[in-house]
Length: 159
Image (cartoon, rainbow, N blue to C red; front, side, top):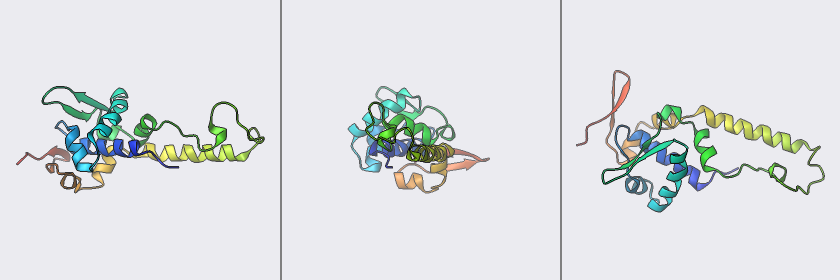
């Protein structure tokens, strides 16, 4: 199984927004940080916005920010919005299936069990987990460093 490039960059975009907490992120900045086109990121933004995972602010000083706390956005939340199909075999698909074993094959149940385990692991990890796992993420993305005060992370003032 392989996730699409859209899902990969959706997660990266959310990580950028989480690392840039307290400020609006702009698509050109995110595109530059990851070396990807702005148009591609705008395309990814639409389903994330519709699902409430991100919020967009229009206007000259507009941008994008997380629609809910980073610890409340699981990787599964992102994958189910950005992936079109999880049909691992013909028997997962709707419609006519040509396999004569479709109703009595163990492959279907084994693959469903594997897919559910995959979803379960994705549900265990949040965007916040990915950001916290990389203390240098702000530096790597060209963002101001985050400071921790009384166990709460706050953005460092811009220089």
